[in-house]
Image (tube, rainbow, N blue to C red; front, side, top):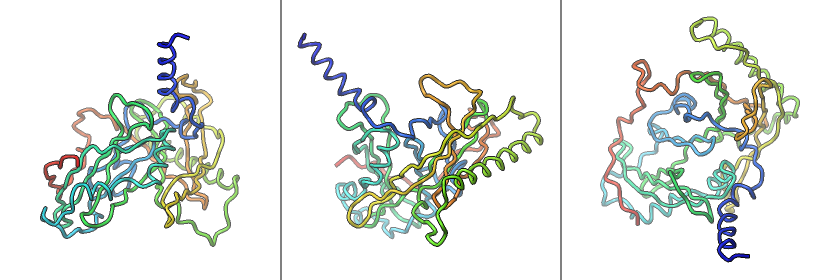
Length: 322
């Protein structure tokens, strides 16, 4: 074999391996809409502050109103950048969740570290990481993970929300979302629900949502969507979600039911596969929140709300990488 071809073949296989050799993942069926994610304030209740980001179908957000007070307001009281970065690096459960979302393992590469002044809260570290595919080169914009750290204190845990969407038109979507932080809070006193009961709870939630949607359509004839929603039950399965690290350093996962619906009238996208809308149900029967999102990609519409601002934040100059 030609040595040049051998080298090219090895390089090609190494580059494509994460895509073609990884285990199939239920999340690969769930593609969010092409123009971007919904506004965080639409899917995360009581969100205050602009610090949020998406990785796959998980929205990570920090609420500046719930930040613990650091009591630190002078730079001389803050630990070194190297110490802050070492403490803020995401733990194994975050790495496992990112692997599940992307279908391949990623490394955390430090992008920058900055201090922000949150008024009464005091100084807070914002440490940003670039995510790079393990064992492969990277090109183009990289996904990012941001950690918040109280100086000389603890890492702030972000609120994590798993989202899925169903397109009705270019300006209207349904969104299914469930918080991942409560998955471990199971009511052990209640008997576990079986597969049929889980599907019935998802179906009741969907039927109520459809009724609410049709009532809104009747109230706003000008916004009426053509045709029928047409969602039919497709299948259901249990997904293990990495959520935390225990005292022994092991990743703890919690089970979550994915009850999937499809519209038989829609043709499958050859590049993305079947268009699946997922309603999540916890093992003790808590059903995902379903919302109607309207005109979320409104470019310059005077009637659209301005992005949420953080009136308390005063960012210090970024600190160079250690």
